[in-house]
Amino acid sequence: MKVYRLKRKFNGYKKGSQFYLISESEFIGVKEFVLRTEDLTNRLSLNESELLKNFIFVKEIF
Image 1 (tube, rainbow, N blue to C red):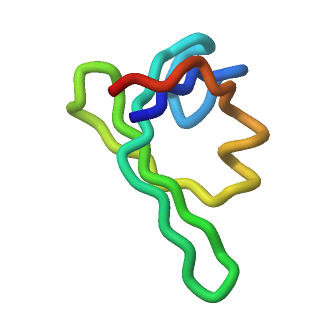
Image 2 (image 1 turned 180 degrees about the vertical axis):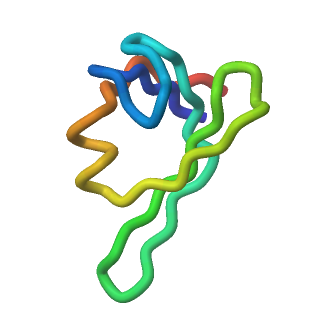
């Protein structure tokens, strides 16, 4: 599982909030990513450009 952190405020979440990448999918060249908050209560569904613009990869955990 990959861990991401917010670069800036996004969708009501504070800068620095931690998220887990739950799934990645690609359909006809469009990539979609599903992230969950650190406490696993909320979910975000993003496209690739939103992920790259607003999130920083932190680490990969097993």
